[in-house]
Image (cartoon, rainbow, N blue to C red):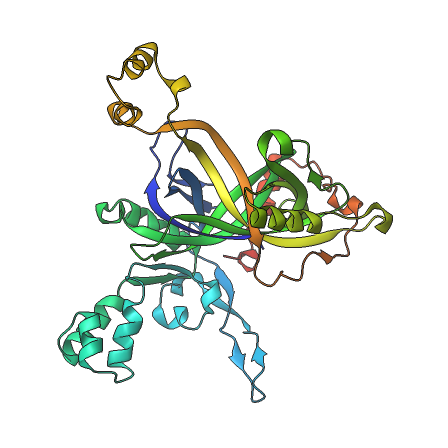
Length: 401
């Protein structure tokens, strides 16, 4: 699964007749869809994130999830067992505690590292002048009280339904407007009528350090065959285009489908970055003599979605500004300040490769796929009511939250 982890400010988009940042849709079956859309703003990037959940109107159903993993006597990790929790009991803390962390949806607004420091004082007995001073408390009792307040800043949910409602309430709070957060989740691809769409589905929102740098990193596993590298724009744009596929589950076809995706690979500006780019390019290249084989490679990318910030140049100036500059009445810096705003170029949307993903330094790997596996399976034509019945079944055993 492709994932993302952004360091960004979070904010609701402006509601219009066509765009609703928070919306609920009810179907004839009694199923209700709840969708929250908000922006992760990092520098010039403004990326639309979303949380989607659903519930039966009468509150029936179960949540199918997993218990935490364990370690056996031999020290081997054992996967957690599947468990089911009644929908009506999903908010009980006793039920939340028995679910594996990776299956929870989490909001944590505590300052990074503060809770662990308080736990060292209260739970591990590290009561020293240094730890108390670092935690900004003057006694063990004060540390205990601070720890309780810290734990109250962490909120865990078993369903996107409750997660979306809480985050929507959070985004309407003025206190979070300038709060820097780590927003993470899954980068999901969907298909509709032959077109493919990207969705940043959020699973966690954590408070980031105040001095953390804005970032829009994702990890994408690309499957590719022959001719994945397009070098036609290297001279003009200084980048390669890498074409391939990522696989995501399609609820209509009830199987994973190949979703086309294009990444960009900058050629670099110095000897080291140029050599690194050429090595990445080599990994995306399959020798024709190897035949109809396919490979995969996971890479880190920067998700770019915004207008590029430009430096003000003379060709951007008005005739009057040019004359003022020519006679020495103003400097370029004064013209920038006079405009009162930064200059931006066209909006750009792309995935810019920044390096190999963790665990992939060994390079691209051979897969069992062939080129024909990258053809989208046909979708059987069904009427709207039949499709709705498939997507929103009446049988509570079919619901997976």
